[in-house]
Length: 318
Image (tube, rainbow, N blue to C red; front, side, top):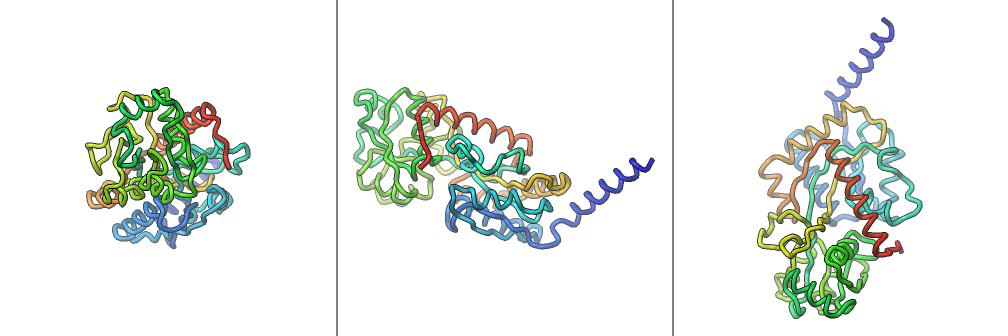
């Protein structure tokens, strides 16, 4: 009898905590500097949660260390729902494939709450490049193996791996030219220093508008709401390619399931609002609220795929 009473009291306490949550501001650590894709996605969500519910999600930028600094800080934080992590594909799907000693593990140290948004990258070519679509790119690459160059935001970046994935899926050889960030990688495309590059939509947009670059296609199997005319790899005869930059919320392991469920439910309701969906389209992505189980399955699937891409391409972290 005492055991049942104890269980009842614990459950009652957890439910009560969830109903009162959040009773103070929630710190959301972001492993990147202000202004980037993850930071922007987080600030849109924080603003919308405040407007809809009065929730105060405070974005705290902790860049550096390949995302390790912010990620490990949250892993060690109290599991009370008041310190969360807003991370992207790199922290949980790419880093484990690149580094031998990642100081955190997804299921050991975290609870995956929900994906927030999901964005394609662009295969953006210089306007003078001798190809304008996937099929022409593949034909050129097969005619001159290793001649075609592509830029990325850095060795081992998600952009780099999306370029290597393209080469592997299409059976071609490309030459990777790493840059220190997305902006210089995009500038290299516009200047003609490389044939094409792999980059997020916001970084590519100025060069598209200036007429110095053209879109070969997107990195995802799903069409982009920004421009449905952009070709998917499948449109170009490359079906086994689906790379994106997703952003999601995580809590420290041990956080009350009732609190996690409440965050999941309210974030998903917020992301379902038409005006919120439009805000995310404006920054080049789709809202992507989902169940915990679906989010965890997606992370694991991506991690396996990137592990295979890294191994096949022989990518080494800097």
